[in-house]
Figure 1: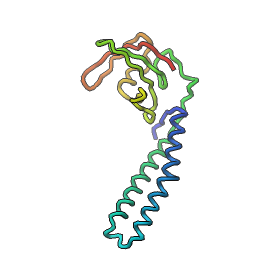
Figure 2: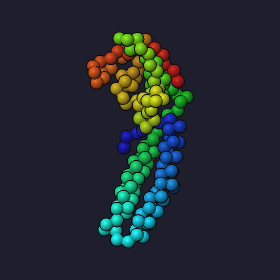
Figure 3: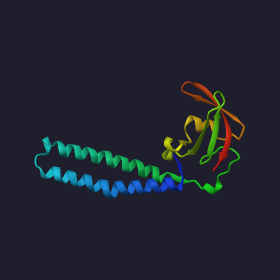
Figure 4: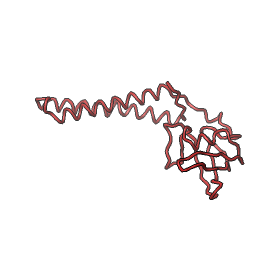
Amino acid sequence: MAVAYMTEEGYEKLKEEINLLETVERPKISKQIAEARDKGDLSENAEYDAAKEAQGILEAKIAQLKNLFASARLIDKNSIGTDSVQILNKVTIKNTKNNQQMTYTLVAESEANLKENKIAVNTPIAQGLLGKKVGEVAEIKVPNGIVSFEVVDISI
């Protein structure tokens, strides 16, 4: 089982999602199955089939999230430095061709959210930046070639 590094915030969100699925969604689907079963002949009961399928999907999701939860390792924000790029750093980079600057926070895969500028540490850009210091240039292979990004700033 692969270790999933995450922040305490991400860990708590995951715990809440599992709890919601188990205490709210699971009983809701069980009720739908019982209601469909009460309508009689199960061999031609589309409601019953749909509810059973939804139950299977829900149980698979719960199992997947519980696996992630079991393999989670919390990252201590106090142990994060800014000498070189590492997980949980906020990194400002500059595209050396067009001088466009972007700022991303490197996070665990389960916490990635592009709208919040949080990219997963296992993405090509993050992988190329890991270990770089301010002023260093990372050559990162992207779908349309290789892009050079200069590390402008590293913060927490």
